[in-house]
Length: 399
Image (cartoon, rainbow, N blue to C red; front, top):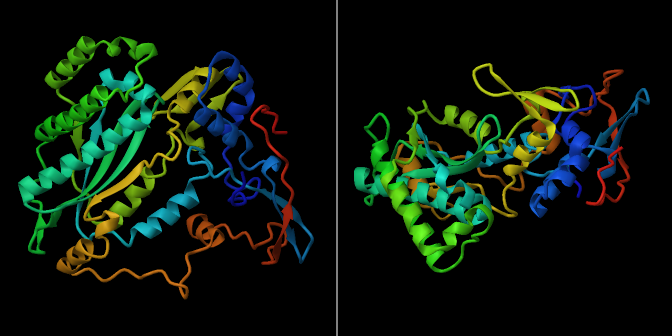
């Protein structure tokens, strides 16, 4: 398990407290108190080892003054708070190829509380239905209200600011779409589509899919969901959910592509909690920032449990594109929409124009030039490989 060398040298922009510090302190106690899944255990292990000598790396040596600085490899796990910035920057750079130069709306679809226990037992199936149902709802409204195909990017999140379990889909939607004649149809409504109507359609699509899974016996019904194995109990749950108003929230539109770039960057590769939100850890309790200047303090074991609640199933795709921005439409409908809006053709990557290296990306994001010696200031740092040990899932000693 190797990755890119760490993004900054020791002492440069490193938070005083990291999620890994808390994991390292209570990992053994956590495994004695809980039974993590295989996916959760892999994340726990990856965060513990991220940017430590156990993963190897490089020794940065200045050819001018001889100064040496170790730079250890990252784990590259998508749940790790330290491994998202460069991946996020690369993703945004690639998304520029699919941005429609128009305003965008932000719509959030939330899974009701009554289905959260079922989602924890069947995460891959339920999460998939949340994303697909949200996207199809928006595409259907685009057809019925605008008589056009809109572009939708969906991102699954499963947490609240205090790390409680709260699955929901953030959807970024174009403020208009392409009709069948190849003309751009702008959205006139301040909030794109009626929220109550979207809630009803989203509810119907998700419950219909859930019913099909139940009929085909493809749901895991055990533990807190065991009573749903009785058909009458499942039917009663569905009926109650059909009578309930589901939460769909629509924000006002963004100003344009520049704003959507910044917004997407905050949402696409976000993890449950960043290192920057941590306030303190005394060996027993963790304090971290939530919203509006507030903080939350919980026992360390509970902190680890909540953090690992949000580990996604292996190979689950949490960022998906539909309609105009779907992969199948990039060279056809999307290009037509861009021409309608008189957008310049985006530059295409080629052998003559290679993607930015991770060092160039780091410099663009942080201003840190890893070729500069922190002692003499000469641009003379040379990388020499460091060996990696063989980490094992059985131990948590990362010293």
